[in-house]
Image (cartoon, rainbow, N blue to C red; front, side):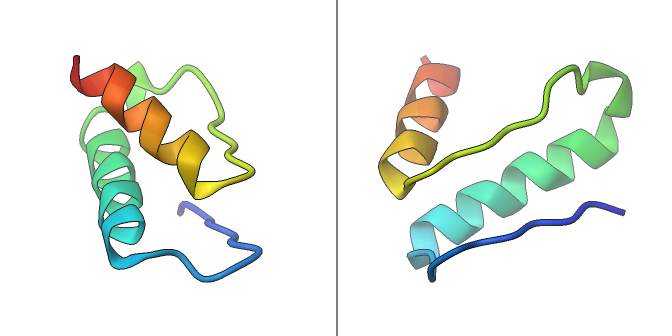
Amino acid sequence: MERVYATKPLTTQAAIALAEILVENRREPEKVDEVLSFSSEEQLEAYLAKDAA
């Protein structure tokens, strides 16, 4: 089971993006090779933008 901790409330868009990452990791656990840690929503959004490109 995944655990997600947020130190402050996430925007709806950031929460949806995080949920998509968790669902994808559950679908293909063999592809999970890193622990993701973001200290800000901007870091999460930058990671998602890089991943989408």
